[in-house]
Image 1 (cartoon, helix red, strand yellow):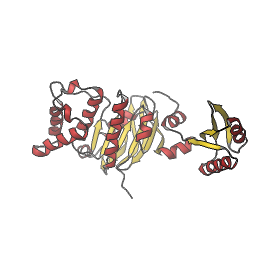
Image 2 (tube, helix red, strand yellow):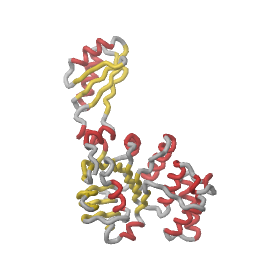
Image 3 (cartoon, rainbow, N blue to C red):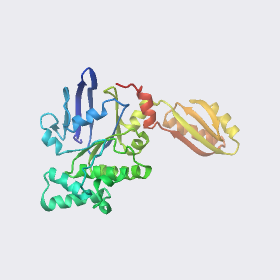
Image 4 (cartoon, rainbow, N blue to C red):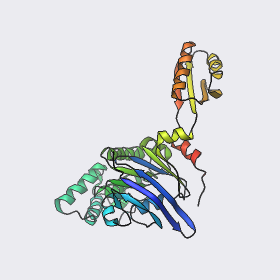
Length: 312
């Protein structure tokens, strides 16, 4: 059984009378990408800062690679790469000088430092930008530099706060591919974002917060089954759509059927086996089914069903 990379146990953080993090507990394993989602003010950034040893909880504990963020923060920092939601490069430094500065700050020296800087720059696609001023990069390339800096000390846990914010579609796709490569290499990635469609395609698991409290955690598919007891099914047939409509509308577990632009759509309350049986009956009834597509809940649906949007 894989030992947890991160274990959060009853974290609590108060700011005056406001409880930013309210007895939060969850865990994650190595090599997993975990989406950290919730409305504004849900406590995501506060939690991430505690895990990165940049803030202290009022109570509770967090363990990274078996080390306490409270008792052994210096050792924890060796295992954590924190990428904040704002990239503010130092002026008068080009890309390689910027990375070299942080490599030195992480205690790297000599040939190891040089090779590590080059490797991080190459992995993040910065080779052709090595002499470019760090302050003169586009948003997308700036995020790549930010990530390269985060990787210099080879952390086992990456904590990324809104890393795709402001990126264009191509930059988001390329950034997503980098995260997948890092996950495949065994690194755990805790990532927050308001671009839920992106997280749906990237994450293995999700942790949902609201007003500092845990709403749900686990694999996206498992949570989707909990919050959505039915599927929306899209059906497209060759031939008379009205005949197909009359067939499906009288079938068990079919509700709220409608025809939209020649395509039949309905809510189906059965499980996967029942959906297979329905498709078999449709084919046996001589319907020429071209498409039969149950739509599982995505992160946006999960978010809307499990949170109220309450701010604090």
